[in-house]
Length: 568
Image (cartoon, rainbow, N blue to C red; front, top):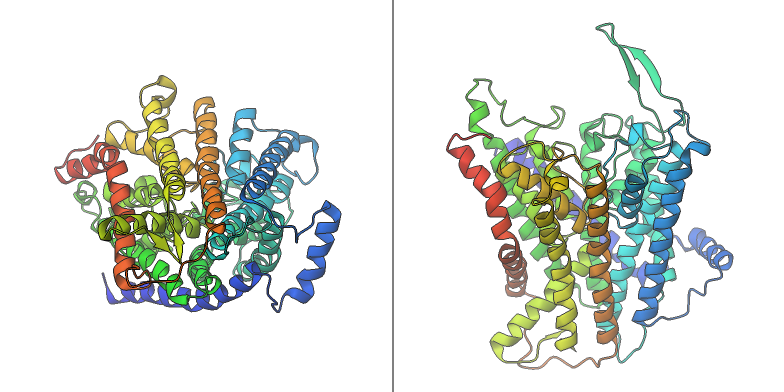
């Protein structure tokens, strides 16, 4: 790695942390209902929303009431977004006259955006009207991200409350996250992107003549407003099929840096917010450190693999040809590798390079990052509650080692909490492996593979990992716009989202009822480097034990074959 590239990576991490620390403090105040500088503007708007919807934002909920409200809101969101797509041909703001997508594609898209996955089995600029993009997809970019933060806040309340029956109010958490956090930052982000050349209009598509004399159609649309929340909310769905490799979404090196910062800004900020909410900032720093170690390891592996490139391509004699395969020349290897790592350790899924063109090892690491369950910073909210799931597993393992009942923040981790935490880890893992297994043995699954051999398995495995992990990126060599994949991946997205949320809300409700026991001589310290190391180790070990056999049949054997000079 050159000094310039190392400087770029270091600069990114330093700026990210400097922005995330004060944001974490601010988010903690918002989620705890404390006064902030935004109250003057957002307070009256919040009250108007509650009045219009007939909601009492102060009414506390049990975990079952919280979960029921969350599920009802999201199921209603799926239905409304499905109907909007099916009716878009009859609605305004459709200058290209796009008709309704197929019902299975519309259902897949509705589930995708409501679950914060943003898997796209279609080309946005040739499928969705401006109204669908704004009133449907962009709106759910906000509320799906806010739903993740709400669940994280509920779990923190479970850890901090003493003998309580409630974990907060879902409607209040959803509204405050949207108004106080996501909306202002998205507005700021959209203005920055517009200033750099990201388009924002309602114009019909423009026909131009190229220098070679050919005709070309340039897609237009309200891109900047969707781009900002797509990155900030770790949603990832692109206005254009090329996503953030498209110059209308990501025109300059500065916007590339800005968008990468926006992807990780809230997930990293929430680790610091956690420390403020539990009244112990060291706890938040430990979560940050554990995730950072894993992130740096993954980034280093992706970069080193990509800069080495494919020796088979290198034999053609073009300097740097293999390293630049599938990458935008504007961003190069280091920023493509950094983006690939950022977008898959979170639930974002936005891309500025083609993941299908990564080397086998370079592609395996993003896939593994998704498989680990959004716990390496993870998505907005989802990353924090996924990290806390592994914290529960880690303190349980430590408790077994020292012969004590495991505790975290003074709350005993007992049988019920362990069962729910294990379910939260196993449910998406089962969805990945069972879905991939089914797709490899039936014609409806194998007929969509564009590449033979182990890379074809990697394409299938990545698709179900991305769906079950609510990521949304893809090895694009697979044709996913079929009846089988639209329905199978929609089911995987739904299971991967709510199969984790419901058990963790149950954990929050159970912990809230418990007393907080004071730390004793035998209490294991959870604020030091040892615990951060143990947490990172448990995350890797669980991931390795669960997915190594599948990875061995796909990217690992493909990497070995590549080194041996074998192509498929």
